Image 1 (cartoon, rainbow, N blue to C red):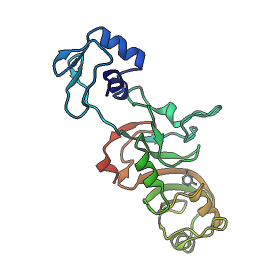
Image 2: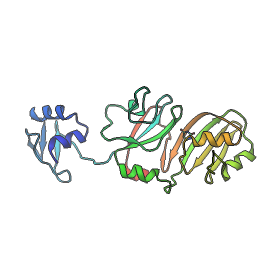
Image 3: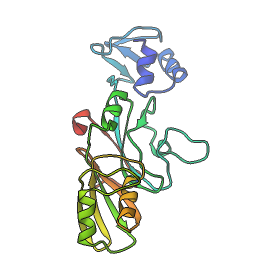
Image 4: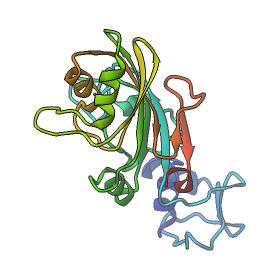
Length: 226
Ligand code: URA
């Protein structure tokens, strides 16, 4: 791979910025200063340093975001702010895409990656990744209705798969679902004559929101996800 491409993909800067950095003799490969952007590097073996700091090549990047309300889950949008606007400078945005979708008003855990295959795999209807939501409701929820949520409810011609539903208090629940149908949690609550007034995803498969602040981003490894 060309040195300039390597550095761009490692998030050092744009093609133009990286060229300048290389021209300024700030990059070395195996401790030899390189001044040509066209130099080829072996991303597995070569040690690339920028200002004496090792820049390790990572083909795939995985980040988790504690999404704020008011942002849509998309890469770009002509009118709305997107989750990409929530990502800090240090996040390498190239080819990054969210895995699945949270509604504009939903908060919580969202995975973003440039690993298209993983993205596809996690979203496949067969993958059945557990997703746990914390929901605040308009009305008290009865044990009867919790049981209906557990067994499956009709959300407009689709019967939901068995779910875990746990009451926190009269108007607060944890709901764990395996699918990811459009507005699924909101529709499930509507199916039992209730309404979600606040929704936050607290886990996605092995990934947990834990103590993440609203708007915070963390880089994670593939092993943390599957
Ligand atoms: N279910 C919903 O209704 N909304 C979300 O954002 C996620 C799950």
